[in-house]
Every structure is written in C-alpha cells, then in structure tokens.
Length: 124
Image (cartoon, rainbow, N blue to C red):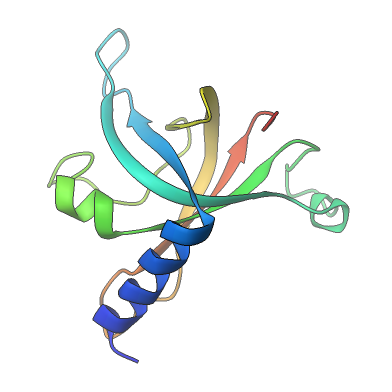
C-alpha cells in the first residue's frame, strides 16, 4: 500500500465515521491559539485499557486523525512537529478536551499518514 492510498482510505473513513474537531495549540501563555479544523474518530477507552498505571481514567478517549489537515495548514508551524503534544487541545462538539499525548501510527514509506491521541475530558 502506498502512503497516498493509505491516506485516501483514512480520509474516507474519517469523512464517513469521524466528527468535526478543532485542534489547538497555545504557543505561549495568553497568546491566541494556533488552530486547524480536522476530522477525527473518537472512542472512549475501554475499562481494560484503563488498567496498568498508564494514567488513563474513565472519560478519557482515543482519537484517530489524518495528517492531511495538519500538513495542508502547516499546523502548528512548519518548524514544529505535526504530532500534537501534551497540553494541546481538541475541541469536540463544543467541548474542549486536553491532549494527554499523541503519537504517529507507523509511517508508510517514510510518510506520516495517521496520528493518534489520548485525550482527557468527558465526551458528553
């Protein structure tokens, strides 16, 4: 599978099963957020995923997003990593959730296709 095919498949999945979100980073305290509109598929972690001292709690969620939007917008800046980091925010259905950590799913031929996040805060 090529990176372009994988990304097209993921973007189609997110179009059909994802939801509109806004990914934000506050570059310095008091500054306006750097934002990008994305689609993400968000599910709450299962009870067995909350065990083992991983820091996850009831109400935390797993988000899957494509690199498409962050690359198109150069988010957060061209010099910084496109992977969201602890403290970034994901606004979902009007609720602001906090990124606990983000990671790149396996690269395909050296290209970033999928980004995954653990986010804190209730989804309801």
